[in-house]
Structures are given as structure tokens and as C-alpha cells.
Image 1: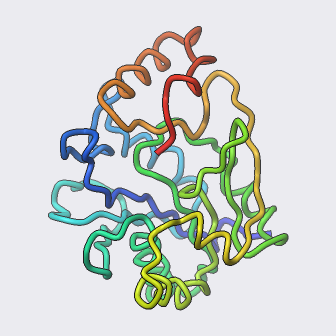
Image 2: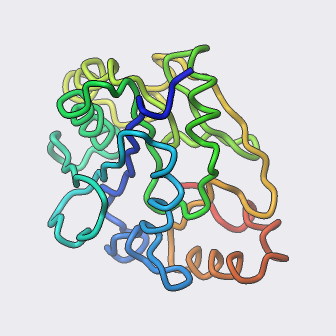
Amino acid sequence: MVDRPQILGLILAGGLGRRMGGTDKPLMRLGGRTLLERVVERLCPQCGAGLALSANGDPARFAGFPGPVLPDTVPGFPGPLAGLLAGLDHAAAHHPVVTHVLSVPGDAPFLPGDLAVRLGSAQKDAPIALAASGGREHYTVALWPVGLRDDLRRALGERDERRVGAFIARHGAAIVEWPIGRVDPFLNVNTPEDLATAAELEFKPELADRASERLPEA
């Protein structure tokens, strides 16, 4: 069991946002608030060590975020694994009590409130605990031991690894399944059309049962 004080929350927002026309997806607004604000609201109470944001470019655009903004330390925008490495290194350097980093995407506005508890309980069965819903594994929603950071650095540098799923497969993961009720808790907003659909789900609950069919995973 991983306890709340031992967890640093890491919001992954380092992508280039190509499907949003180059716009930062976490800064898109849903119901008057940004996606990032919604993710922070749901994740922060679950992480005793607070939050960090993985993002490249000018950090000033995330003014008001309640934590540090961490750029990739690996060149070439290699993807979520680089953001994860930045988060693990930050935890090791600045949070000696933290043993695990809980990563989530910055465009998932409906994250469950029991994410840290359930992944923390499952972590004893494998080094990594991974969220799933509707039979799909969500590779960027996971609880990662800080001790994996050296192997991750080698994977990015020596093996040129870019696939989160491949890195997880090398170490093993406990899969924790969430039910899809009113809405898929791990629904991602990837395109302007997805954002419009999420707004419908927000204000028209009767549409929510079709969310998993209409919104693709990142």
C-alpha cells in the first residue's frame, strides 16, 4: 500500500497539441474552466506531496498552477516518457519522503477521486499500477516508483524507447479496472470535436453513457 504523503502528482502536458491546432489542450475551456483546472481539482487532494506539471515551452502560460512546471530533460520531444522522467527526477531531488509519482494526462477532466487509493493498494502486486476502463489500459494514468528513474533514463537514451506501453511491459504492472458509469473517468479530450462532446456530457448527463464510443483515447 502506498500512502498519500508518499505520492507526488504529475500532470502530463508536454505534447505538441497537433490535433488541437498547436493549442495547449489543458488550457482549453470546458464549462468556464480549463481542463487543467479540472484535473488539478480532482488530483490534488489525492497527492500528499502536491503536484507538478510536465510541460515544454514558456511556463508563464501556466501561471497559477499550484506547483513547479517541469520541462523535458531529453531533447526532441520524445513524448510522455520524457515527462515522466522529469517528474521522477523532481521527486527524488525535492521530496525525500515521496516513493511514487502518480501520472495523469492534462486533458482528462473526469478523473476518479479514488485513483491514488486504488492504484496504491494494487502496487504491491507489481512495480507499476496502471488504470483501465472499458477493457482499455490507460498507459499515462499510472503509479510509478521513483526508483525506476535510472532505468527510464537508460531506456530513453540508450534504447531510444518512446512507447509508454513497452516500458511498462518490461517492468510489469498491476491493472486496476474502473467501471464506466455516467462517463468514462479516463475520457481524453483530443480534438475540438471531443471538447464539444465533453461539454455535452457535462451539461446533458443522459448523453454520458455513450462517451466511451464517441471519444477516442489519447
